[in-house]
Length: 352
Ligand SMILES: *Cc1c(COP(=O)(O)O)cnc(C)c1O
Figure 1: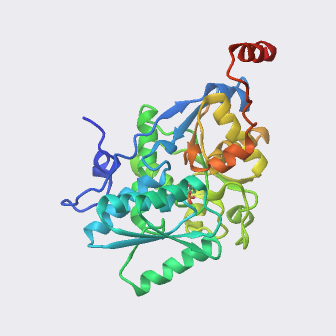
Figure 2: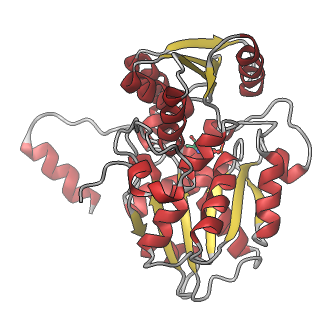
């Protein structure tokens, strides 16, 4: 059977009506990549089985497609003509794509000036109405929550329960890809905490064992770690630049039930792991996506996680091309040479 998207693949685990028409872009079924070089770097000699769940390979370049296929499918079933969301970018791009596919009007609210270029470009290409809100993500989400009380427009932020239904399939896939078992550690970035909540739902429902959860917040946007709302969240990892997570309580519950850990990682630690993922394993992600690895490395170094013989999955939530600005800022400038083979040869030999 060819893959026709995660709602089709995991239909028996999802609470949709029997006659539903699925809106899909064949999302899901993303690779679980074994990362031996990184394992050797963060836990030398420990025999840590480290895997990268590369969610940047979903149709719009982030895990948001898992939830969006479900939310848009249900919205269409309920007769919606338009959808709205607040977003740091990836939810917006995903909503825009699935709305286009379903023939719905799509309005997205983004914090002014804070959206990565690849995400904005995608929203515009898919034909969404993009509104830059003079405020933070949290302000934009407040607006969305209010407008859906006044107007007949479907909300597709992760406070929409169908988003979590779709996203929980990530846990099913990981268990299937590991040969029918959960890993010991499941590591991921935490912004609004929809994904950590959804993964925990998924592992519990699937019954293939339970991992311990390791959540990573950026140090400048770590409300759950600090136990207080952060008024002006700041981090290079724009996808997790959130000061008041919508699913705060559920995240705490998932962490508690899994005997998990939530920790803050600095932008320097995030960028270091972002670079390692690309340079050591050939996996290019957006900065927020490297936070899970940064947290795992930090906790192993602190002795809070014993990596010996363990299996850890790190979820890489979004593709590197989402944020070309950061990639270019962080990179060395390309070398320029005359178009002569001697010049190229001199360069190659001198670099040895
Ligand atoms: C949305 C997003 C996150 C955060 O997920 P939450 O469900 O909000 O915790 C992390 N990384 C990327 C790339 C995202 O798009």
